[in-house]
Image 1 (tube, one colour):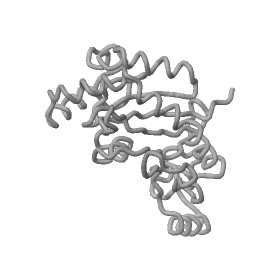
Image 2: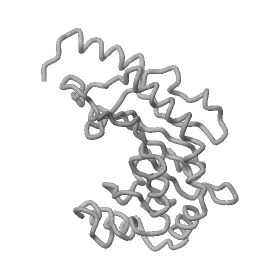
Image 3: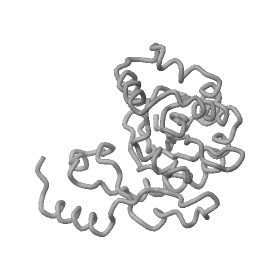
Length: 233
């Protein structure tokens, strides 16, 4: 793909002035007004681009005002509800059971993840285990009450899926920011992903991850929810 000089220089300047900003709420109880993206441009994923120029993986794609407004609004409006979902007894019990089992080494987790990614559809017994359980049923009920929740999934203290409303592409999320930044070495914090544009739903989408806390307020896992701005017919 060929870009004109003005486009290249403009993107280089933007990249220098506005480096990537991760959307982390520093801690539970921190005022929403202090969210780090409130007064900054936030790069979107190149894969979320809507034009050939934007699809250049070597150059940042700067989120426009609508994307930033959507991201800020979704965080402000959703955090309380997401924390409430993550604190439900069904969720806590499922995560605690997974943590207590401790049956998988990292090598076993990697092998399970490879097998998971080779599955097609949702009929495989491995996938069914995490789609069809009481916690997953609860997540789907939460999804039904809010159609803009495209998916919800819960992870244990190793980043492995415990329950999900829809099949995820990976079983192990432990190497992804949605888990590493949210679990935060057991300290727990809200993590907000990058704004993406989903062509299938014709809407902006952002993932918000919230820590799962036990009765002692210790972080035992994490929950990620993909939230859409609402599609256009």
